[in-house]
Image (tube, rainbow, N blue to C red; front, side):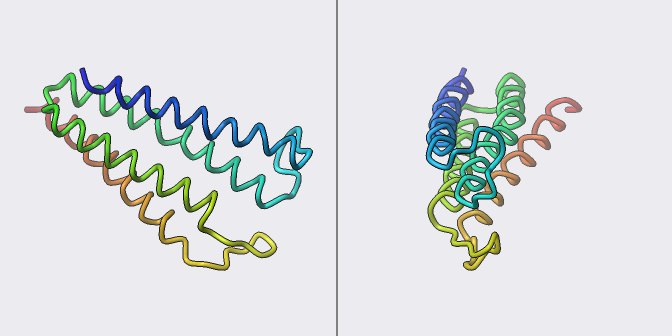
Length: 134
């Protein structure tokens, strides 16, 4: 099986994002919530967004692989999803600039990351649906 590779990689990414939040809580004295600090909020959202999208992706990828999706296609979906997640996190953590919680720059990396993410999830859902009725 190929899916466990992506389970492991996404698990490591999640740990990295979690450590970033933990360190930030100390830096910004934010025991709970974001302490009304945009940098803290950005780090929390990067971690939370990974937690929101990775599980459904991994479930879909595993089912598609069990349903007979070829290894090259599993890797294509996995790599596209990883690229999307990395672009999204990069945008939130590094590329975007805010003033008073207002976005001041085009979040092209975040938009592109979400396009990758949602297209992979949608494609896998359709593949599983087709595998189930075919």
